Every structure is written in structure tokens, then in C-alpha cells.
Image (cartoon, rainbow, N blue to C red; front, side, top):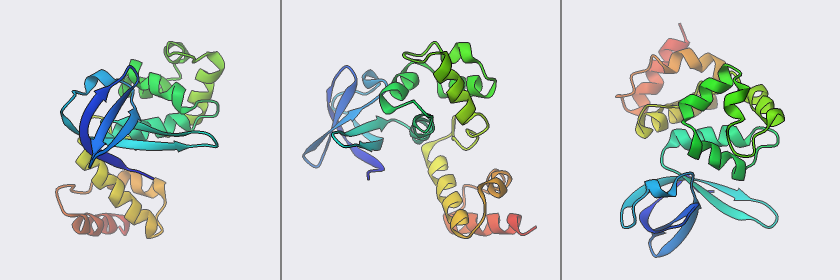
Length: 187
């Protein structure tokens, strides 16, 4: 499984880019290939889809975009090929707001999303999108995810962590963040 690929974009297609990393060209399906520039280096977060006859890589400019994509494909009846255009057409904040407000009409504007699937998206995702780091840098999102993983590994539940993670000083190294979080959790 890949987390990200760092390399130079060598080709842009209508729904994908090719990223050269140490002489290997990775074909990454992305929501907006024209937001990349040929010859520029990028750190592209990836999701690998492996099925019987398919082995595809999907690329994302930010970790928040990847996290949101993973939430979307967890919806019953919504696959990777339907989730990618949703990211291309709408903003993450707008889609999250529509889900939380149960705005079916907004969700139906996306390609191949009908009434039934829009309702399924709301049913499966409403109230489950609070940990997606929209509007903050990838470093902060990575650090928060790392801290969350450490605390879950120590036996804490996701619902216990939500109020604590917001109070931890992210400028500290991860060891200091864990200490701060544990102090807050033990109060």
C-alpha cells in the first residue's frame, strides 16, 4: 500500500497525471489533473484500488482530500470512479456542509448521483466527517493523525479523543503532544 508518491509530473491526461519517481512513471487518477504543472515536483497522496482485474492509483494534492475520498468510497454504492468527480466539481467544505444539513439537492448535482445515492451518502456520512482536516496544512493533519493513532493504540476511543486533540499544542514534537494529550485525558 502506498501513502504518497513524491516526484515530477511528466504527463497530464484528461483524468490522470504521470508522476516520475526514480525512473518509474506512476499513473495517478486525479480529480483535477490541470491543477498540476508538467516538470514540477509534487508530493501526491495516493489510494491504491485493488480488485480482481483492477490495480489503480488515485492521487490527491492534500491529505484532507484523500481522507474525504476514503469517506466517500465507504458509502454503499459509491465507488472510486464516482467519488473522484465529486471532488473535482465541489469543495470539500461545501460537500461536508451539504451532508451535515441533509441537502439532497446539492448532492444530486454531482455526476451519476441520484436521489437514492444522495440519501445514502447522508445516511452513511452525517456526523462522521469531523476529523477531516479541511483548511489546515498537511503537516498539522499528519501530526494530528499520528497522535490519534498513538492514543488509539494506547486503548482510548475515538469519541474520547475529539475534544482532547483540539487542545494539544501541535508545535510540540510528537512525544510532547502525547504527554499533553495524556494529561488532558487523565483529568
